[in-house]
Image (tube, rainbow, N blue to C red; front, side):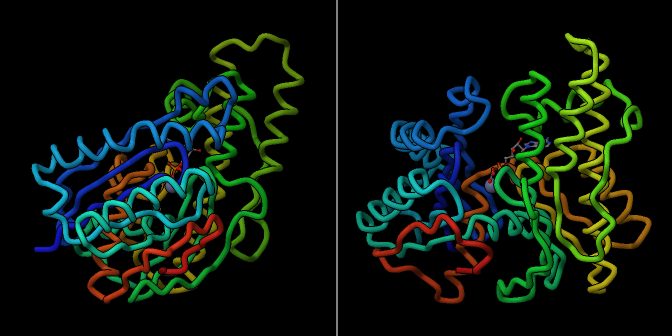
Length: 336
Ligand code: KG4
Ligand code: ZN
């Protein structure tokens, strides 16, 4: 039985998970520095890095305790190599190297985006490649086909903001705080998604996304309203904005399934926690006989279990990393 410890520090979550055989999650501890970024309306890289240093030992202790094992009981140490904030990545990777050296275990560098998609395999044992993957997070929005052996065929990506970034910026504009995604998700339940016809960038033939036009449309709409906005108005704007994002993601993702002939779809990343997105994709999948895998919420947001899970696949293939491994802020579905 192979047990791997996975470390994730690419952004504002310090996370460590311990996973057996790539699937069985023994612990998945996440400490977030979100509260320290709230005043700035977005992640401040220096603050994120400093908090990683302060809390990572405690997160490790909690992860080992919850898994009821010692560091010497793990077979490999994995950490996110990239993409992410350079100063944040370096903390997790340096920590992983220290642990690997101290117990003489292999180090495995992991691609964060591939790990988000691996969360799909962890939550659905019947999932088999090839499948269409949609990564929607604060830093990325991309569509790909995942082939066997961690081979990624890119289809499209965002040409401007990531979907999560659009949620965060619109939330800031509406005075809803950071991170914006979960607040807009909740508030949208009170609003009417058809209240405002925000533009959808879906017309083009390909698979690329664009959210900046939508963001500007929300800004212009807000500017024209008498201030201050009342809660029901804000809820209508939030719901209409969310609906536009969801429909844009839906259109390109379903197109990818149709054109590639893939009957399986996995979503991953923080925005994959969005309830409306999960609902609309699940309904569309049922209509089209596509298996839609929406990992549980705790595996959508940044976490260490998905890092440990994917590392199991790498270790099985003998893909371990040298201790000289450097963080790569621009890594993108390399399969490492
Ligand atoms: O994957 P993630 O935890 O970190 C990155 O790798 O970026 O994603 C964070 C992003 C944030 O932009 C956050 O607002 C968004 O995911 N998010 C959501 C929801 N929960 C988190 N967006 C929409 N609906 C949600 N329920
Ligand atoms: Zn992420």
